[in-house]
Image 1 (spheres, rainbow, N blue to C red):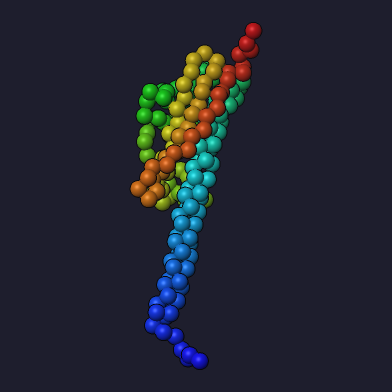
Image 2: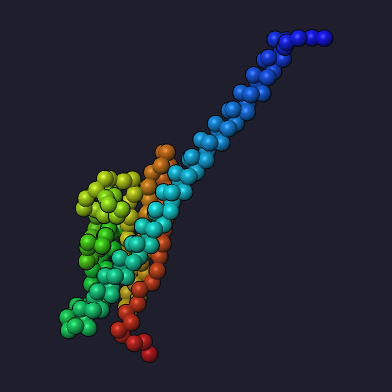
Length: 165
């Protein structure tokens, strides 16, 4: 009866254990990478939706001003951001879209351009169309691990104060 292991058996056992440990480390690393990308993508989707809502809020504020006797156009603050431009930016502290190209900042759970910690996220808002319809498209981009990622959203805004025949 043999006692102990031969040198070959020890090397084979170490090889099997190291392959198993290496596989677990690779799996954990890949999962961590996917989770980080998924988190950034979810944040970008919310920021794209927020960009659409900001444009809608500007339009609705114009309607309230018109309803209260103000003399402005329904698309006031939405013009000048056509897709042929570099894009506009806005957050909820702005009443109009402005031609800028800055990174968003993060502070107290909110993204804005005014204060906070700089992020890798850029939001561009484009408004196209004429007459009683405007198409709002929003593009959020960010860099992660040397790759550029993009999320986009779009909607149509209508001048519902002017009835169509």
